[in-house]
Amino acid sequence: MSSETRDIVTDETNASRTAKEQTYRAIFLACGILSVLTTVAIIATLFSDALTFWSEVPIEDFLLGTNWSPQIEGSYGVLPLVSATLLITFGSAVVALPIGVLTAIYLSEYASDRTRSILKPTLEILAGVPTVVYGFFALVYVTPALGTIFPSISTFNALSASLVVGIMIIPMVSSISEDAMSAVPDSLRQASYGLGATKFEVSTTVVVPAAISGIFSSFILALSRAIGETMIVTIAAGSNARLIDPLDPFSAFLNSVEPMTAAMINIGKSDVDPGSLTYKSLFAIGLTLFAITFVMNVVSNLVAERYREEYE
Amino acid sequence: MASETGTEVTDETSTEASEQSLLGTTEVADDRGAGPVASTETVIEARHLDVFYDDVQALQDVNIEIPEKQVTAMIGPSGCGKSTFLRSINRMNDLVDAARIEGELLFRGKNVYDEDVDPVALRRKIGMVFQHPNPFPKSIFDNVAYGLRVQDMDVDEQQVVEESLKKAALWDEVKDQLDQSALDLSGGQQQRLCIARAIAVDPEVILMDEPASALDPIATSKIEDLIDDLAEDYTVVIVTHNMQQAARISDKTAVFLTGGELVEFDDTEKIFENPEHQRVEDYITGKFG
Ligand SMILES: Nc1ncnc2c1ncn2[C@@H]1O[C@H](COP(=O)(O)OP(=O)(O)OP(=O)(O)O)[C@@H](O)[C@H]1O
Ligand SMILES: [Mg+2]
Image 1 (spheres, chains in turn yellow, purple):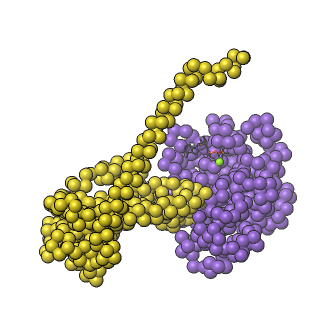
Image 2: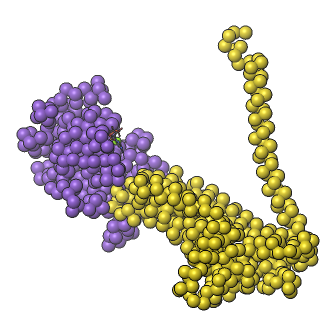
């Protein structure tokens, strides 16, 4: 055996290295499996408990029912909760999408390196504020402030919750959109400037269209976050489960509503018997919520897929 | 320094000489058969132009007069500042934070770095074609119409797009697929599209930074033919690494050498056959560079 080949055949040191490699591999694999198993287990319990609930309350009564009054009337129509969730998501979208995108355009196209280096971390801090703090911020500061404009506003209301959920998701929209905009090749900006475009035209006619799928996917991720948001809405939106009348947005926003997540918390913290129907309804709502966010995640992945093909 | 600038073709004392040689070009080579060269005016003039990137000087005391409706080639080794010079003409260097300019750059006698010059308006008169084709991820039609739209030009889009594509020798290849993505075109077609896009807004000057360097020989020769035609209507300034290309397509050639110095600027024939400077001859014959 030549001295060169001796180095590469399996001897003792090489063998121990191979063994170590295999141990690492096993540890990483175990962690991977653990997280997959946990997810599967959660979905499985959600499903089985939701199914026992639906064996007692027909699924169509649940999904299409317009009255949610589990303890008093034994009525399990989820639509009031879904409508409240959609209302707050819509309200937060109105706040967060435009502000988030404009912030992203500012950061990616207008801000100097120095400004960007201050603003980006600040936005990240906004993303790191615990949601319970946002919740009390909504209840203690935002609602009273809104009361000076709308004297008829309730202590618990959808408007204040929407605004604050919106503020909470701005950094998500702005940071993902900004990534998408920064990824637009500089050569496209140069082409546009070279044709006599202003900075505003470069931003609106080149950068935003080229980054549109990334921007869209930031919307969906942020909205999924808003749909699943629990603490803010439980604290600030209240627990009045009523079906929203889309023709009367004013009263919808100014009064108390009960979104899905808040309803789950309210059931969870009341002293319902763990075997009771009301308790099981928790899982039915949970599964419905999961289905909504799951669909949104799938859509967002499809969009992101397209995004990769946007430009070469 | 002073003794060195004394030998430059375009400084004060030799300006007359260069104008004389301009007159001379009629007999030299004008295979396009364009109008009498004697009427040629200077469109772009640099006077003692220095460009810095932070502390690095990329151009040193450049003096040049670029004539109207001719092809002026810029050659020189990599990093000698050719692109920098091109970008300082239409103020694309404004987009580079580190870039700083001293001296004057005149477009039709007006210093483009004067406070009252709007770089956006300037770029509407001085178009640019880049080294790598950079069509927008939009349709072929929208690419050509892009400049018309941002400049709010009151023209018949359909007609201008067709004319521009014809001038760029691309019309026949794309006329049935104008609504398809420009990204589906070949590299050479994309580059001709970028040229069509630049001429659609009817600039006076077209700057080209190695427009054919990313293309194969056939696509390159199409671009070269095109540049020849363009000089009927436009002043063309082209950077190229390809010496034969410069010799083939240009009327005038500027040779930059390392350090950002414009060493010689003259008729293309003169530069390639009988340059004044030994360093230029060495560069052209491949001894240096
Ligand atoms: N954006 C920039 N920031 C800092 N320095 C730069 C920048 N652009 C160019 N330079 C420097 O300026 C000098 C001239 O660069 P330039 O791109 O003008 O050369 P060039 O002649 O076009 O070269 P090439 O033939 O390789 O394209 C080089 O030293 C380069 O490193
Ligand atoms: Mg260059």
